[in-house]
Image 1 (cartoon, rainbow, N blue to C red):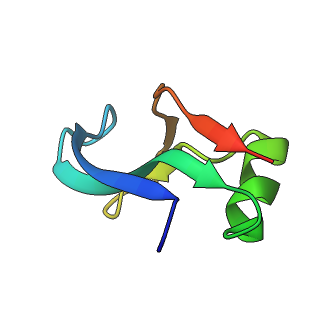
Image 2 (cartoon, rainbow, N blue to C red; image 1 turned 180 degrees about the vertical axis):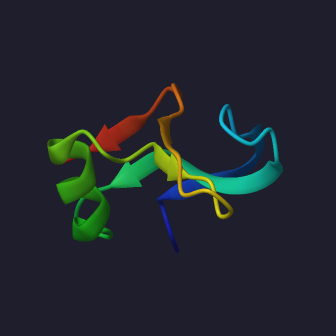
Length: 67
């Protein structure tokens, strides 16, 4: 059974105003997803990039992680 959980979010790029969907992680089990644990440690878990102009943005979402 997977404990980590993500949810799709509809976002709009602040640069080109294009709407797109991004995957945001809300629950991360570190043993199950060490790749996501590294992104948490790097502070990049919720960094998203516009697929058109490659504008990077941070989406503020709550997260629960179990180490």
